[in-house]
Every structure is written in structure tokens, then in C-alpha cells.
Length: 207
Image (cartoon, rainbow, N blue to C red; front, top):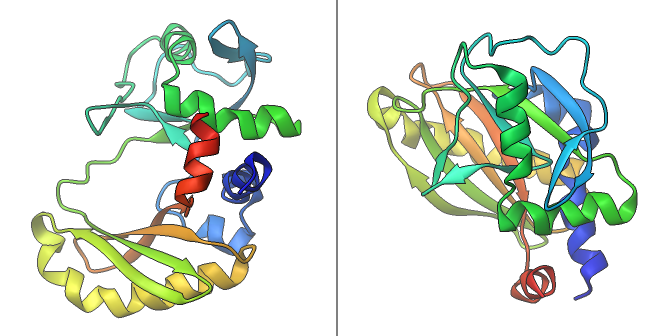
């Protein structure tokens, strides 16, 4: 597997490249997106958007392209009322190693690399399930049951499987890991789509 193949898989799940029906199915839409450029070991805005508020209007979290900032598996939120520009500058100056590796797909291909800011959501009552889709079909990977939605996850699984198959049909034919949320009312939403990278592709990304 080549580095280009791995980069193509990463770019295929860029939120800005998702077909409109898939983007509309996402649980969270970006509230603000900022184009970036490299700066030292990190990144900085190509320009600050005029609509950037002085303070975070609500709890937020950011994604550098398709990768979030995480500490010990938990998101690093931007809390409501925090001064937004300094916080964004600090985050962008400290990308994780995984974020830097993934960002090369955007930088090397000349694709705009974006910081997406999303509303932070409490998942304490939201159950999640992950599915792999590829040429062999749809396969269940794992699930996490939480709170009020835990007892509803089983009934939601057939809908998730059907949605995963439709997502695979709408994207380039390769492997994906699709994550769904089961909400406390039993509704199913798409959380995110990640590339299903082969071990050889992971090796070339980390080389």
C-alpha cells in the first residue's frame, strides 16, 4: 500500500467532501470552520474569520481536519465563555502526532485543511456502535451502552446496519469505520465516518 492510497482514504471522509445526504445525517454540524496553514510544529488560521466571536458562545470541541484533540481518550472541550481566539491559537500550536500525520493528506494534495468547531455534546445518555463496511459487506465492530439509551440500542442495531450499507454505497469503494449514536429517544444519528486503514497503510503513515 502506498502513502497516496492512505491519503486518499483519509480525504474521502473529509466532512467537506461527504455527499450532502451523509453530511445532513451527522449528529453534529460544524458551527464554524477556519482555513489553516502550517506554522512551525503546528498550524494557524490563514485568516481569522470576521464572524469569530470573542468568547465561546457554548461548549465547543475542535477537529483538525477529521481528527479531534483528545487527552486519555476524552475530548478537550472549549468551555463556554473562554476567550476563543487565544484558545484556538493554543490548540493549533499543539497538534497531536496523529493529527500531524493525518494532516499531510490535506497539505500534500493541496486540499484546504480546516479547523472545524462543533457544539460539545454530553454523551452520558447516548449509546454508540461502530460498524466496518467494505467489499465484504457490513460487520459489527463494537458498542458502548450508556444511560437511558442503553436498553434501546439492541432495537436500533438493524437501522444502524442498513444506514451503514447506504453510507458505503455513497462513498468511494473502500473500507470505512462508521460510528452511530443511539439517542435517549431511540433515534439513530451518524457520529462520524473514519477510514478503515490497513496495517500497511498505518505503517506508511507513521513512517
